[in-house]
Image (cartoon, rainbow, N blue to C red; front, side, top):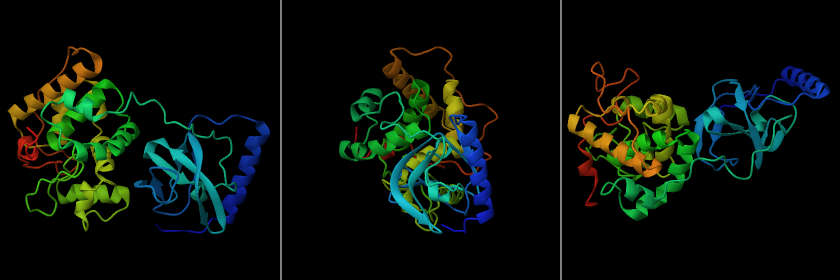
Amino acid sequence: MKLSFRPSLLASAAAVAVAARLLTAAPAAADTVFPTYGSGVRVRADASTSSAVVATLGTAESISVDCQKQGDTVTVDGHSSSWWAHVPSKGGYVTVSYVDVPESKLPNIPECGSTPPPSGGDVTYADLTAMFPGKVGTQSIVQEGLPSLNAEMQRASITTPARKAAFLATLANESTFRYNADQGTGSTYTGRGYIQLTGSANYTSAGSYFGINLTGNPTLAKSLQYSAPIARWYWTVARNINPLADALDMGRVDAAIGYAVDPAEDVERCDDFKSALRYLTGSVPSGINCTRPTSASTRSTQGESAREFAPKMRRLLEGVR
């Protein structure tokens, strides 16, 4: 993390602005924008310096904050704070020590609730085996990863039945819900993790987003710490797949994931999508599209596919069936 000194003039100006807000007694909006300073400031999964890094800020990037909570005390340039700002767009927390305000606690920002916002319910091992019979990995491995996977689904707003069904159907076929799944082709940037991250471009982009040297340490992609966050990143940042799930367009979901064109696998994944929807809602809605757009190629313009030339999911089952 690159550090820079807190500008005294900016701090003074911020103090004047804060005082003006206090005098008017106007309540803050649900999401209030604050300036930060420094470069490469880390956004963490919780209000702790030991929590996983979920994103990094650009130089003096402004952040939109909805609430704040107490955690580890951080001191920067003589400014200490135990408060951490929750930044929904980044899916985590930034220490207030890097927010360019004179206070140690953000003014007019509510404290985060003691419990996370409703997420539609966490996914359990029993849920997965009911939705995807024969496509769920070893119970001990799957259950070990579920807390992280559920947390990242919430951060990615994968909380509606359609979004859950599309995301989980994808992971059932990519990794059988094993955070440590490894395609094992011998290539340095082979498919790894929940989403089977593949190719040097994706490893470079994901590493830059999380502030880690993923190209130098590619096995981090299948670590418990980063496998689920990388799946979230690929789904929401690298590809923006939630709107496709909202439209019940599993064909375009498959195209965005980017595995090699295989009509039989397209049908299989769409059947899994329907199975998940039936389990989650009690019925299968009309209007589901299972066909990839004819103009789509196996490569997205945003980079290499998540699982280029990957073998069928059955090679990943490792005796599950």
